Length: 113
Length: 114
Image 1 (cartoon, rainbow over the protein chains, first blue to last red):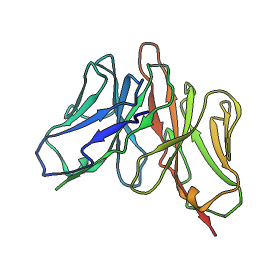
Image 2 (image 1 turned 120 degrees about the vertical axis):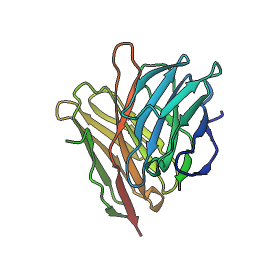
Image 3 (image 1 turned 135 degrees about the vertical axis):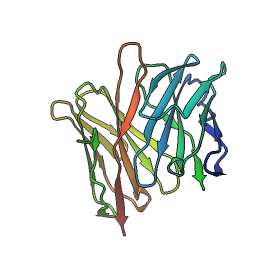
């Protein structure tokens, strides 16, 4: 049973650049959520995708955008990177919108210099 | 006031003892509650989910929920050194026509000593 996968594992960018992170959900799941985790903090909700639509969004600026594809995989895009965007970006998959458990991928560690 | 509060720790318990981790939340509309374990440098791993008041047991883990007191706890029996990690409490709420997002606490660091 394939779990949640994310790519790349690590990424180093400079301020002002743009980045795209990718996620494939666990087999059988159709909902993808993205979280940002700064060092020493709990994950913060960015947004959630279901049926290729953004269903809910956290308190993140429009520089953060996403997409979900027909095969349920998802991308997170961040434009005009700031030093403060350095964090672990986590993708979580779940089934539907019923509030069931979310399973996390290994994450992408983004460093902005 | 933080939406989900946890004591950051570290909570130190000897091997074989019971570790008790606590979490309070502010949104009375919350409907789902989860405990995740996160090892240093790794992603969170789901260990328990609970949706109704009372206790739920799974192996050495017991989750306890009291919605009236807005309180969730996790008990780890027979603690092992491999249980040393940060434990994240997450709370979810489902609205009509919307998806469920999880709100996390900052985590409690557990240290199991030999």
